[in-house]
Image (cartoon, rainbow, N blue to C red):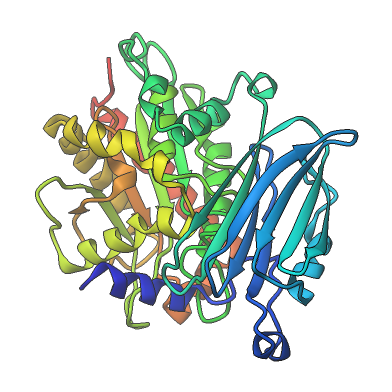
Length: 412
């Protein structure tokens, strides 16, 4: 199966996409107006504005003060209803965007003016069509670095990633001293898949993977933090897009002992069902299903939207640093989690599967990807929507963590 086939399948299942989505009318399309959607994704880390068009967009971006504004002039388009209503998408709780105004600046240029609540660093880029999504113009608004929270390195990692220098954010120190779980708390990084532009798979009844797995991860973090010898962090705790490599980098920055990526994917057949656990393979996938799922998960960056410069570090460094011991540890950990998942749901496969999942490529952290259930299966979509099943998944993963360390695992 080709990557393009996987992406088209993925986009078909994604359905409506963003919650704040305005679609152009048939009249607007007939009139040749090219912007078909505007989306705004606010978060505490950064806010993103996406303009989707059926033609490539050319732009100029600059700043104005008193009040602080970010201005984007988009060339060779006409104002239409979708653009004109962009201001309605701004949420009152957006930390960075106060309002958005749009107007026809001249005969061939539409001007967007974003009034900003506090000092930001804008980053703007375009994306080619992918997986059924049209051309995109993406404007990210990052707070200045001095405003970042000292207990969360995500902003610094994103800045380094955007500069193509994620390597300098990686820890050069030894792992945390002492044995995890005995001499110090076990540090666990939880990774709710997808987010923001990338909604992940979407079930027949519009259940979005990104929403379900975030709820599960939040529940699991709450359970872990109640343990006297554990501490949990999350790669994202909001509906925000975080590149795959930044998720891995955040785990390494926190010097995590375990990395757990949580998903609820889809398959081409709605008959596919069951829970699965995956570990990394550097020698090819261990099954056709594992290869297929890795292709769809690895497409997250293309769908979520990253600029080219962000791809340089891990492609050339982390991929070459993988260690067989870490993969073996991942398999042992995954076996414990899979056994507990089998008590609450049918298992798609009774052994830990392997493939080249980009998000599992930390060279020094046992890492697994848990497919909680198939959101494309009608019965499992129903289960995924229930608080009861979400809590059962969290309980099962925690039981797997405890069993793994009870058997003598742990970094020193």
